[in-house]
Image 1: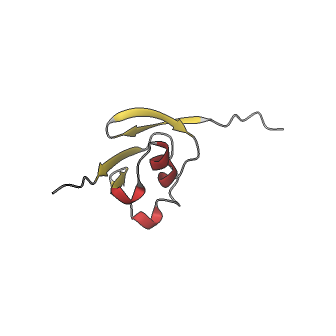
Image 2: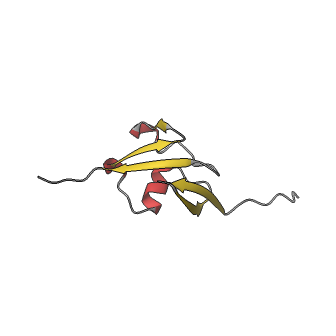
Length: 75
């Protein structure tokens, strides 16, 4: 049996603010966790803009820096 502990939360930076989030989230799950609609957000992770198709495959890691840009409707 391993003595390795699995972190239940990790710390990431979201739009400049440090946040604790559940470990193992993909980016699309992180957006859900933050009550954001993935279709209305552009995500930059560690200075790289993510393609919308990759959000469900990209795992958020400890220390990641994410910038979330929301589209706002209006007329």
